[in-house]
Each structure stands twice: as C-alpha cells, then as structure tokens.
Length: 459
Ligand code: ADE
Image 1 (tube, rainbow, N blue to C red):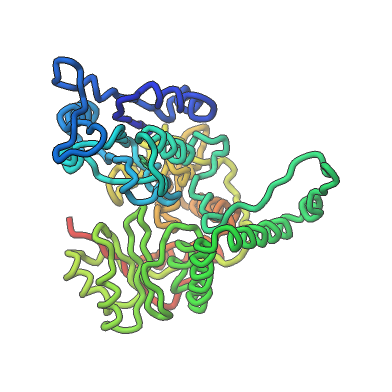
Image 2: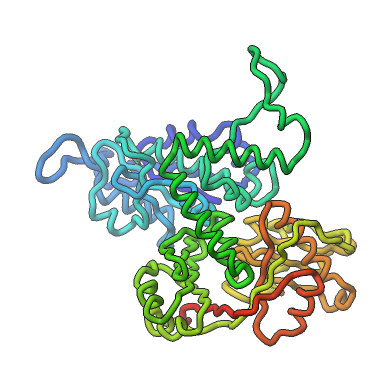
C-alpha cells in the first residue's frame, strides 16, 4: 500500500515512521511512505506557502496553489482518496482503519499553523478525519497515527499471516489482560485458568475479563456491545435465514443502522452492502429512508423490498439465493493435502478464472488473506475464497482436476479456517443450482428454507 503525505514537515513524517514494524514493512516493500513537501510546489518567488487569513485572526494559512499543485503531482490527475486531517473531521476508528487498509494508494493532507485555504480542500479532500477532541499544532502526528493503525492491517505487515479480518473478533470489547513469565511476581500470581491449557476455558475467561473491563472503562462501547448481542440473539431465532446478518455482526463487519425486532437494517461500510429485513412493506419503506447514500449492494430477506429498492436506488436483482451454513464446530477432513493461502503472485491466475465483480476484487481478496489455492506439482489447480461480505465462494477447479473431490477438499479447508476463528461458515447458492446445493449438503451445511435476494446498481 502506498501512502503519500502532503506536509510542510516531511522529515517529521519520515523519521516517525521508518523504525520498527513499519520500517521493516517499508524495506520489504509491503508499504511505502512518500512525504511530499508542499513548499516545493509554491509559485512564490521567496518559497512562501502560507499567508494571513482574510477577515483577520491569529496565525497563518497554507495557501491553495501549492497544495493543489503538490496534490496534482502525486495523483497525476487520478481520483485518489485524500484525507484532510483536522480536528473538525469525523473521529478515526478501527472500522475506518480497516476500510482504508484495503486501498492501494492513500493521500494525507496535513495542515499546520491555522489550517489550509478552504477552496483547495473542496477540490482535493475526499474525507475529513480527526484523531480526537483536542487540538495539536499540526496534522503530521495525526497522519502518522492513522498510517500506523492502517498499515498494521495490511496483509504481511504483522508476522501472523492470518487476515486482519480476524481481528474483529474482539472488536467491540477492550482486550483482556495478558501475563508472561514469571508465574509469581511481587507476590501476584498469573490467573490459574491460563496455566491449564484448556482453550475453551481460556477463551471464556478472556471474554469475561473483556466484558468487565469494557463495562467499567468504556460504558459507551459496552452499551453498543450489549445492543449487538441482543440483536444477534433475536436473529438467531431464524439462524439459517439470517446467518448473513448474524455473521456480519459477529465479525465486526456491519453496523446496526436500525433494529427493532423484525425490522433490521445493517450496513457493511467496507463492501457498501446493506442487509435489510422488514416485517411488512410499510416498515420496509421506512428502513429504506435510512440507507446510506454510498450503498451499492443490497441483500433483502423479503420479496416485497425488491421493487422499492430497484426504483429508489436504480438497482436490479442480481440473484435469488438460499443460504447454507455449517453450525458444527468440528473440523472437516481434507483429503487433498497441498492447499494453502494464496499470495499476491497468484492475482493474475485467479483473475483469469474468476470473472464476477471488477478485476480489483480478486486482488483485494487475495491481499486480505481470504483466498486459498490447491496445488499440484507446485502449480495451482483450483481455488476458493471468502467474499468481502464474509460468505464462502469463488470456488474453481481446473478442468483436468475435476470429479476427484478437489472442490470438496477446498471447501472443507476454507470451512476449517473460518471455524478456527470462532465464526460460523456460510455461503449462498443460487436458487435452482441443485449441483452446488448437493455439494453443500454433503459437506454438512444446512440450507435455509427462505430465500434472500442480491440487488445492485445497474451498470
Ligand atoms: N490537527 C490538529 N489537531 C488534530 C486532531 N486532533 N486530529 C486531526 N488533525 C489535527
């Protein structure tokens, strides 16, 4: 991932970010940080990039011209996400970091002194983000904070090769306390449960501590957590029909925009996906009023929602599907032995064979650590992936390797990886595709009795 930082103090950015984990990630070329001096682009003969604000007031403003030209030099006229870091922005969160970490390039614009001429912000900034309700002397430290939080979510930056998506497991709660050797220090013992090797008990203990800690230190987060748990419990009354909503909430992918028993509106900001379930057409209409402007995909649980969505958001129905889910916890046997996580070098291979969505989609899924490949003599012969909404899919097996159970092995392998994260694997089967449904049922996935519909913007 490439970061460009437009600033009057490029050294501050480079010195702050070239050590430790981010320094190593830059050496390995997983990330790059280009600090661009706005002053280098001023048209002023004396190298000045700032001036007094019209209307008076303390301090100086960075002028529009050098910022505009520096931005143009970096983007070359392309439309890149450009974050203006400012205390007037929306608060930076882990969710925003996750969304931004999926981009290939990202521009930060740092003000200093009193800020930047409004007119150039209106032309180049796509987002206004703050790191907290306090005022710093400039945007450099906030840009560094955000780059750090975003970079560690880029696959390959941290040592574990599992996807950053697994982090959302503890997303809504503060992390539990941790202990290392010695077992007794200053007369304080490590909690006994951590020494016995019972992973289920350890997980329970950690969740309880997380809940306690969140309740006492962050009652705001705790309230949201309880609301979400209650909704998951409610949705679980129809688990197979609502598994897409349940898992999006559990994995920290979706936020609740509305939830009142049978009327639920969830939004997954990363994939710009709205999930809607309504009791009747009238309550459905009210939910549609709350749909975010940038939503581009919809999953509905009732037929009567489809026509209003098509009319209101210029959409069409892509598929009617049933959902299948694997509620068991035990791992499935995987006969085919050489299946592994796919690296970036396989982007062209998968792209040539998987054609749904735009071509960037495959690259994004591979970078997110969400695709697995089967290999024969070191050559790929099939793959499977986890879609950005969390469902299983993208199954492909080379003609030469079909009818040998490789599809079953690939899907079993992916199911096992999902179970390891404490999630419930699920997928979508287009209504009428009996072959796929048969495969799912053989693997132990249960079908829903109801249908869901996928809708999206017309091209
Ligand atoms: N610039 C100055 N203070 C800031 C803050 N709190 N967040 C983002 N940018 C800033």
